[in-house]
Image (cartoon, rainbow over all chains, first blue to last red; front, side, top):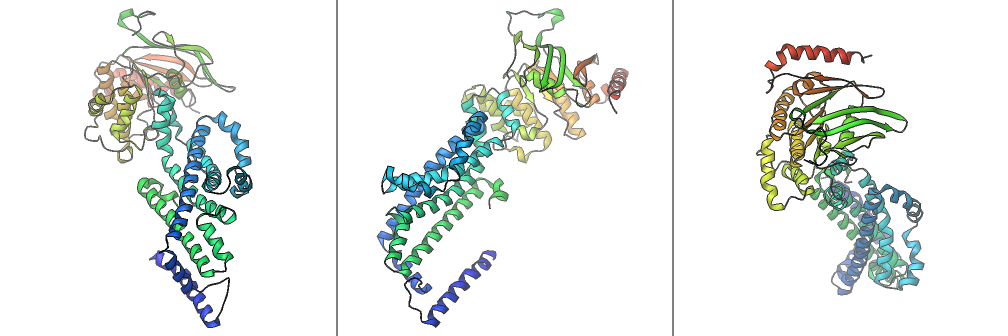
Length: 250
Length: 266
C-alpha cells in the first residue's frame, strides 16, 4: 500500500509531463514526451546492442566492485585487527578517500587507455575506500569479550579471523557491499559518459549528441531501473541472510 | 602433570597447580593488585570475595594470563605463565557476549574442540556428552539467542569443559541469574568439579555462595588490592542447599565474612 502511495507522485509527474507536451504541441531536441520515451525504451529492449551495452556497464562495474570490495575488505580487516597498521595507514587513507573517483580518470586513461580496464580501475578505486572504512569500523566494534575468548582458547591468528572476526562482521560487510554496489554503478556510468566509449553511459552520450531525446531519456530511465533493482535485490538478500540487520538496513 | 619440577608436589596428597608469587598488577599509575600470594592445589575449590574495587576480576585475569604482572610471577605447573593457555578455562560473567551468536549450542562447544585440534570425527560424540553433562541435552541445535540466561551460562561452562582444563576460572558466573537457577547451577558445578578433579577459582560477591562452594575463601581488601585473609571452609561434602546452609559452621563463617566485608562499606 505504501509502495503504491509512493508511486503516485512520479506517475502524476509523468502524466503532467505528457499533458504539457501534447497541449503545447512542443517540438524539441532536448525533451521528449513520456509516450515517445517508453516507445523508445520498448524498441531498445529488443535490440541486442542495447543489451550488450547493459552487459558492458554491469561487467565493468561488477569487476571493479569485486576488486574494490576485495581490497577494501582485506585492508579493513588488517587495519582493524592490527591497530598500529591502521594508525600508520590512516593519513594515507584519509588523503585518498575524499578524492572523487572520477578525478583519477586522466591518470587512469594514460595508464590503461580506453576499455574495460580503465573503468574497472576507477570503480575499484572509488568503492575500495568506503568498504575499507566500514570494515575497519566493524572489526573494531567486535565484542571485546569474543577476542578474550579467542585468546583463552589460544586460537591461531588464522583461525581467529575465520571463526570469530569474519562471521562477526559478515552482516556489516554485506551492508558495505550493498552501498559499494550503488557507488560502483554511479562511477561506471560516469566514466562511460566522460570518456570510455562503452556501456550505457556512452549510449546516453551518443543519443544526446545525435539529438535523439527519446533514446536519451529511455537510457536514463533504464539506468535508474538497474540501480533501483540492484539495491532492492541486495536489500532482500541482506534481510534474508541477516535478519538481525533489519533495523540498520535502510 | 609436569613431574620434572616437583615443587611441593606431595604434601598430604596436595598437588600445586597454579601459584602466584608476590604479583602486582598496574594499569598506568594505578596499582590494582599489590604483592598477592596464592597457591591453588589440584581439585581445590577456592572462592574470592572482597568489596568492589579490590581487584577480584583482575586477580582472575592474572591467573588466566590475560594480564601480565608488573612484579612477581605466576607459575602454572611450575613454569612461568604469561599468556593464556587452553588448560586454563575462563567462564565469564557476561555469557551472552562470550558465546558466538551465529553458532548453535553444538557449534559453540565445538569451537573449543576446533581450537584444540580435535579431529572432526571425534567432535560430535564429545559435544553431545558435554552438553548432557551440563544439562543441555536436547538443546544441541538451539542458538544462544533462543536460550535463557541459565542455559547460556551452562553452554559457556560446557565450552570451557571441552578444553579439558586443569583450572576453571569463573568470574561471578551466576551473578546475573535468578536465585533458583543459581542454586541449581551451584550444585551442578560442585558435581562437575568433583568428577573431573579440576581446580576451581571462583570470583563472587555473594558471601553465602562463597561459603557453600569453597574449600577455601580468599578475602581481598581494596586500595590497592591485597589478600587480606584466607578462610578455610571445613563443611562436610557433598554440600546440600538446605542442611549445609543451616550448619553452625556455615553461620559462623557467614557472620565472620559479613563482619569482614562490612568494614569496607561506607
